Length: 463
Image (cartoon, rainbow, N blue to C red; front, side):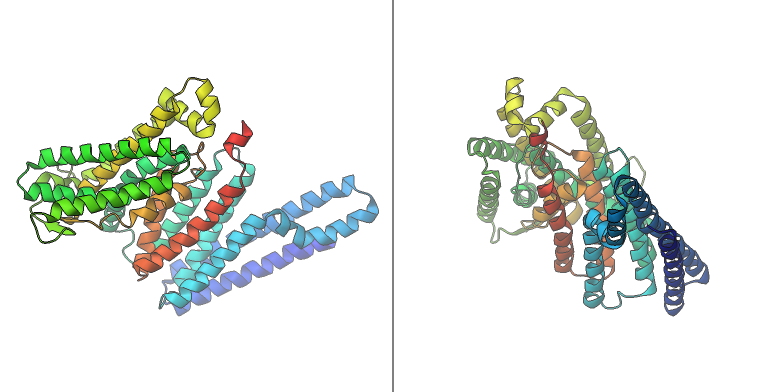
């Protein structure tokens, strides 16, 4: 690259950054934003664009072309520098370019779908998110640490900043507490899904089991069964369903998705039949929920007088134990071994059957516990309370970075995915987007991730 071209690109970047800063200031003025915030965001936009322009379009291309100039004959150098000035950068970073175009398309789509979405705040928020994604991309390429964690944390922080800037009351204590409570429910439900996915399977019975145990627990309490005993019965029921899932799916290798889906329908239908025998309906049951269960899962729950819902602390404690257990215990290492390559695990005398059935048992237990705690939050048994978890549990695992092919990932990744989905859900709800619209956005997020995992070399092929 000639020095003249290099200086031209630097000047063009400065011009573009200044124009973007002026545009940000104008949008802030039109949106009647406080002048201090307008000034801060305008400067931030200029700084981010200058930094990104310097690294992406000037510094990296200039360095790479200097290396090529030293290794190639003079007659080929001129042709290469002309071609690589723009198209070669796109070819080398096509994933980042594709992601940027998808985000731009999503932003335009939301501008049409959500009335009042396009404003100075949302534009500045989108630029902030883009800046965090650029940082994540840099770390992904050049830092020798876990890349899924980098991307997940960058997206989570960016979305949180966007929500705090765009939505009034997003940072309020009540909203933070609400997000953590709902994240705790999803986090407990994804424990089993994460472990199952790490072995290369899927458990689609989770949402059905959540709804069945939620309805069943309320029905047992209404029939006069002591709440503590009904709670234990429900947990035992979920464990038995998980055991059945594990045994059947192991014997029918490769059919875990169909098996668990069929078991889920069977459980929901059976519970509705049993509940409807003494009543006129099998879909919803109301009654008196015990105070200890309400305190466990409601937004107003307290932990030894502190205004912290106990379900949040339960999720945090289980998350720590599970993350440590997967990384630093024999059980966790064996689980990775079975998910990575079953033949090698078998030669090490690791029982594939025991671990496969075991993770489904854990999945059944945590699904039942989630259904029971949701009863404390809602105050009534409803068979469809777990419907949303059919997609969310898989989405949280995939967004977090755990490979859907098995052998890679962990619950720490899923925690990031759970928090990211919860922040997105709260953000979209704050914009007035319907539940169906939120599901559509979640689908747009998970599809490219699954496509990316399918292109990556599986861990079994690397051993």
